[in-house]
Amino acid sequence: MDIDNISKIEHFSAFVDLSLKEFCEQFSLLLSLPPMTFITEDETESAEVNFNGIAYNISKPNKIGTLNEWDENVPKEHNFGIVLSIDKINTDFNNTKLEVIANVIATNFNTDILYYRTWFSTGFSTEKVHIFTPKKK
Image 1: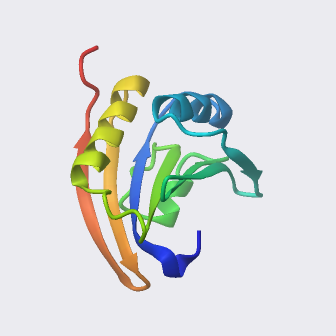
Image 2: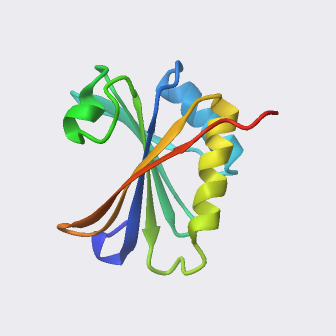
């Protein structure tokens, strides 16, 4: 997704005791997404998929604490970063849909999901501190 076509980027993090592949397989099933593309770099492994005007990116650094080094709003123990890049053409994405996605993830993985930032453009983002907790199944 081209940065010029993004209306905003939503940032989440969590601790989940799964491999990236296991997490992404469940994540994709939960949100009815096509298969993700996996990328391995020196410091992290990640997966991504673009679907219906949202680019989903899941990253799992090789070392606990890396997400915190990248953004001090992320707790040191969190090992998964979840980023949703919303395309400008996706005009029906709203806070209700964001909350549904976060609640589904929190409940399925039985973990708290931290919603910590919304990026709007270079140099302009809003810090958040909202925790989505698992719902009783």
